[in-house]
Image 1: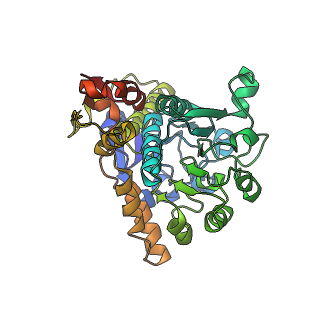
Image 2 (image 1 turned 180 degrees about the vertical axis):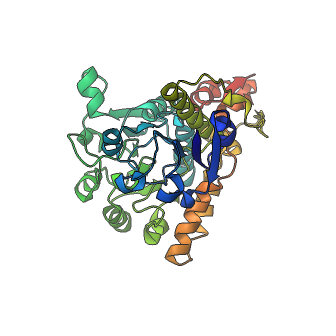
Image 3 (image 1 turned 90 degrees about the vertical axis):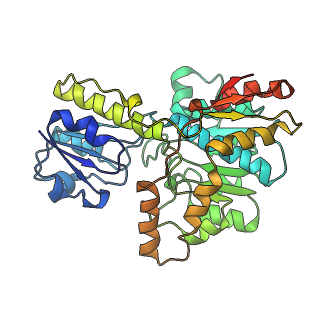
Length: 382
């Protein structure tokens, strides 16, 4: 069997080596000609797969090490008899931790507290559910909006999108869809953004085109929105330089890029691959990453505001400001160089480990922080 894989997917060579000849290519080199003789293709969300891409190939299986599918023409693949698999939920903890870092950063920047504020969550799937639990653990009130779930499960526990507009912070966790009852393309357009609470904050880690970039920038300029934090952008990797200048934090579509999230994606795609081709070849992805450099955080007995302690613990594991600073460094380059820089930030992303690897040692003076630290994902001990 001939298998083409994106070389920027961690451990992908080792994962698929038992099944045949594996060719690892850079993302930009994964072209129609490069996959013509392949039986299977394992790619990232940066590779777009439409009809012409697979014309004349012998592909039988395509796996995407990502949660989204908007880069793939699923109907066309189905019509051609090409199996497809992605990795839904693979990086839910990673995105949750990114949102936690963002929320605590917001509170720190604004010298305010998250406790008692309201977080509106649009899209309550694998990621949104974890974000809701985490936010509740930080003492935030939570509003949940997910029309497909509300129709399937009943309206209890869910609110309308209009009701979410009263939240202090709104975070987006929806797929990008352009048609249908729940289409999300420009879900947050000029009219929707105008209905948000004045001074509120918009956080998007879903897909860039869920938000109308022009409308968002105008709301930031005129002050109707208090701030925005964006990990995803319309037109990636050609992001709007002016919008980047106006957001509180902007990062290069890396919210789900923890080592564990990436490894989970490979596992899920590999399992689908094995089911499709009938292979039985166990692989333990947990054994692949090296032990994290940071295993323990000790909180001192000195009195400190609770959220400051939480922010310092989170920053020790994942400092969101580093990623924001990295993206801004490319802002002065010409458009093509900025796009290449954006791709490189994703392809060569620094090693980031999830909070579940870390034990936080709490003194008696901070025993009350055990619950929020656990909600964030840390192990906690006295």
